[in-house]
Amino acid sequence: MEFVPQLNKATLIKRYKRFLADVVLDDGSETTIHVANTGAMTGCANPGDTVWYSISDNKKRKYPFSWELTQTAADHFICVNTIRANGLVEEAINSGIISELSGYQSLKREVKYGDENSKIDIFLSDGTREDAFVEVKSATLLEDGQGYFPDTVTTRGQKHLRELMTIAQSGRRAVLVFAVLHTGIDSVKAAAHIDAKYAVIFDEAKASGVEILSFFASVTPQEIKLYAK
Image 1 (tube, rainbow, N blue to C red):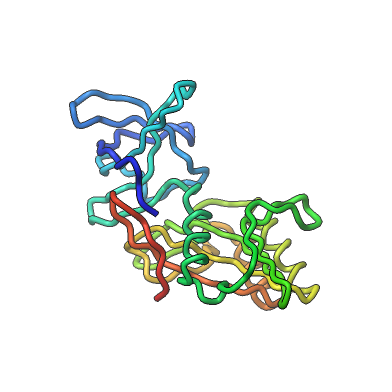
Image 2: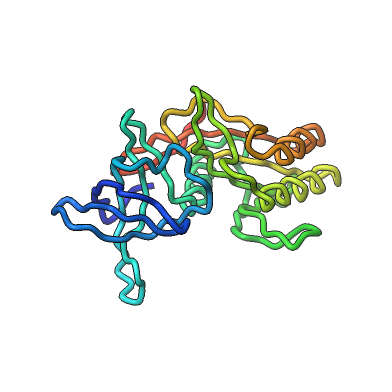
């Protein structure tokens, strides 16, 4: 996934109200940018970090700048725009990088399913084999050398695990893909110390047959690509 047009650089002052952040632009002026991330963004939003942002040409937007990447003091790159995760996984499926999910005839996004009024991120179908329900989660939390998901309590994430578990228990294919969008993370696991209930359901889902896949990201201000370790 290439950033077209190219990203611009700023310095973070602070993030607040979840969806807003104040930054200092290269010319020294201050402005507010949009943050497409509902999580805590722990370690991804430290004052003084370098922010890479895109610019929307939609004249109706109040905040035309969107925070895409963080470059930390340790020179790690992190994609903080969680909207990017599904597109990256779709791109990786289509290019054969996620070989476990390759070869399906049809790929659809945001398909309604389940008993809890959910939408699956990616639905793969094929006339000759079982359909696949693929849920995508963006993992960006790094603590003491270990990557985790989630970075805050997520009732929505718990619901998605239950939905996947129901799919797996019915004999159909259910897959959870961690898109690890932090270049400092080498492995990811459920964050029991942050959301104990999520971790319990995660273990139950895995035991019920939900497939767990992790793919990592090469991140630069020019492009992001997923790869398998």
